[in-house]
Length: 358
Ligand SMILES: Nc1nc2c(c(=O)[nH]1)N[C@H]1C(S)=C(S)[C@@H](COP(=O)(O)O)O[C@H]1N2
Ligand SMILES: [Mo]
Image 1 (cartoon, protein in one colour):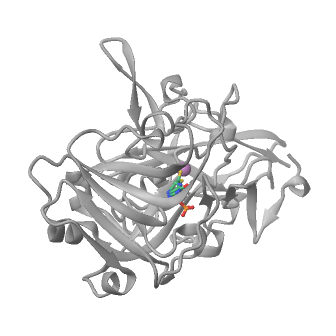
Image 2 (cartoon, rainbow, N blue to C red):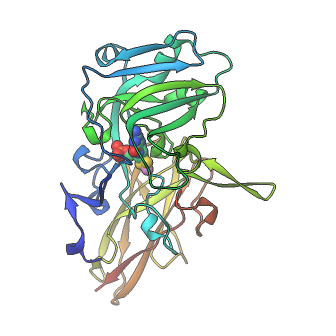
């Protein structure tokens, strides 16, 4: 696609207007924190307009003392600020061959922000989670009727679940993004941040937390945002959870013209869930040989890390392919081929970026 064909809104690529889906132009990435105004937006329904003075968050289900908390009370609780990378599970989908259903994201359905909010464990402790509880369902205020014949008839709300143990360990109920109140499109007044997991788990416009004693099998947990996992050769639908290890090249961008016989700084980011990035390698010859890139800054849990590689470009003009490959501290590395059991999600196989040396 020609640059001039790309429709932008406030500098972001419009991937959908209703519901609103905006992508970060990835070649503009130049810092650890993605500015809020460039951060990608993924919605499934109209953005709910919520009056924070009338907003309540309810906590119910398998708890001793169900309760509701309002915005003012939430802000009075102990809080913390953490950086976390959010990646849409469909990020990079436009690279898939053959094409699959869903928003045709390029490289920019991923970003890192600093999130400020209350650890979910504080609210869970206050409610008194019963011993039989296994999962926490997070429900958003947004909803509507879907056309998918597999969706339940009538109104549906966006909801996902996380295991109790994960909920207690590091989930945040965030009300600030990069130091200011959450913007409407990012979940105002309060959203969940589930570090290390694909971002569908980070439910926006949070209105209800349900403690459950059995696996949640809602639409966005099983029919959508699920993939095939093989057990005894039988494929089973499995909810998406952890982000898979990945490196992406921000500069140069696809089809960029690069000067011959010069030193070009190839830049990008890499991330994984839980562990750290152990190394990023770059191939400038279509995956025949690999050289290690330099990791920049200190690793932070569940946040991406910037890297760079100084590339001595060839003297001869012609097409070149750049491929980045990340390996994490658990020894997990990006696969070279697409795993078709992943359906239209979890796209972390090696992606060639073509450039032209001139
Ligand atoms: N309530 C609600 N939460 C949601 C969604 C949604 O549509 N409704 N989309 C999810 C998905 S698929 C992604 S990728 C992230 C996107 O967060 P962002 O728009 O702040 O980047 O929000 C998640 N949380
Ligand atoms: Mo997503």
